[in-house]
Image 1 (cartoon, rainbow, N blue to C red):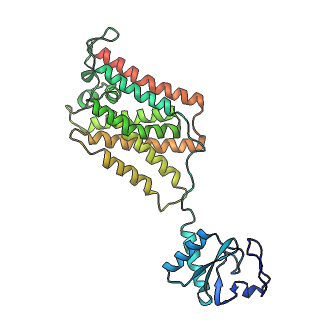
Image 2 (cartoon, one colour):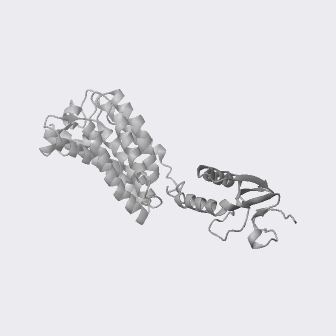
Image 3 (tube, rainbow, N blue to C red):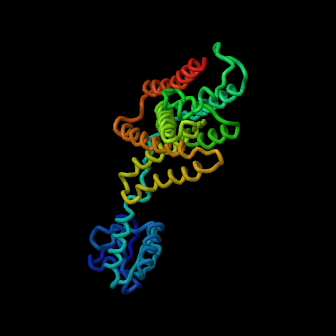
Length: 332
């Protein structure tokens, strides 16, 4: 028998019915690289592919062995198991056709980490201001907690600004550091994914709506502060964006992003003596819904351009300023 180099695209001049038979291996037949083509040997396999297919056949009790040929590898099965082997491998490839998933992230992430960290630093700076005794713009001394906390009864009575101002207040240094360090990871990634303006606008909306819903479900005396509602809004937004993107390649695995987001909510959002579970839950829920809407429009229209992003960032920055102005006026 003449032996030819086993390079892809080069076939040995054998009869079609015996092309997959191996010299010195009577009764064994080579598995073709193209499982959907005619059962002939079209090319050799990579070592990874040959090993993977061998493991698949082993799990299905189909005898097999792999051998090196030239620059590649071949997978051999007994002649009487050839068609069974093809069937098993076709089923395996069909079930795993879209796994691992394609990269569903945007073409590139926005490099805005520094600006995002600057906003978080501004939040820490404001915390220091609330610890000072003094007046501001002629209003003083200011009791920041009294004016801006999310007191359920006052929110439901019409003091809308508390749904915003409460997000900028913290009960202590540890409370602040927890939200900045843990929440900062999610917020930085979200801003890089969607763009800073859109991301901060969604975060603010999830925090405000979550605080409002939490006030509606609690008695009038219930009071809370902190950016954690917004932080879990970020978790919900990221989870829904991932869900929206992966829905196209796997209906069987759609629940993975949701399960991951819920796990984070359970791990990070239910610990601590003074944890407001309701605020975390509602922030997550509204973040999830807003994230779905944002993912839909970003897929259809693309991420906001520089002007649109700047406009959204401006709106997200103005709302807390206006809210605190309304709070200061109400406290005169």
